[in-house]
Image (tube, rainbow, N blue to C red; front, side, top):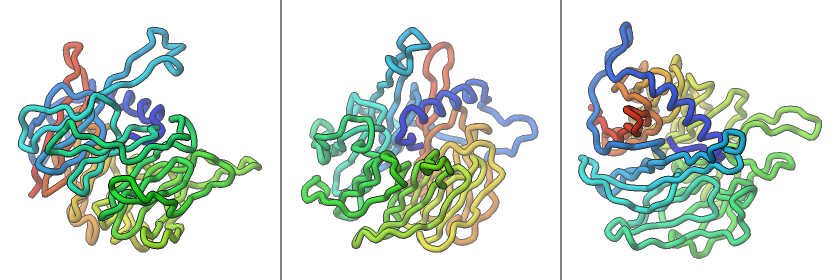
Length: 359
């Protein structure tokens, strides 16, 4: 999954999933639907995976650790997270270090480079896949402190453009090298400073989901809203208001999907029209991925990955694709779904980066 941009919330979720992953069984539970296939392990010893992306024959992934302060009462102030961002060939093999920084949460590819950033960061960096030591900062906000409105909620690669979405709702667009950056649009939610939850690109539009928990001055709850913003004009359109908690906003480049209530997936075909139910009756959705034809669902409660065939046009009932103990993150590319897991065995991190080719 791509960690939510509010890192503290994402880590609480990760910890909860870790607890479930510890007791999950690698085999099929009695009475459970049999998996359609089994997975291939690409890398071992993964912890709290994040930032999964596939490009240039490699899978990029973060592996992260929580460094406790030693005093649970002080962890919120003094504890911190660290990690490494690496890559491994899509067929498996030796992992290569991309950067000794983490958790890397947002990763995109374009213009022959890989772009990445952390949650609550003020910067976006790109790296040349052919020369991993060749990095370049393509976005850096000097006024950003890492806390509050100036931080990067996320970013997207749209053709030859870099689109930066700040947590305060300002949306910037420039060249892939970071030059020519200008404000394209702005999303506002009352007087709140932090407003953006997540974003994706579908077609020539940017979809932005606002955060939950906002209220009016009178104390009334403000629903979360999904906006569609034209990347050429900046025109903003309200797609839908969401009264149930949405999460895991993803796109296959054309269609948009998101989870609600942790058990249902909604889809917007072609990025237009009203959301429709694509899958329901899941246990606890922790991530989604789509390849243009199929939707893949990571269910942390059931320790499984499910597939929904023909998701954009005529979604079929989801089927269990593979068992995945401690499942946390997904991405899909070229008919293959890649995933990351987290669990502990014999006091060691034992999560994997795995893949499943789907026919």
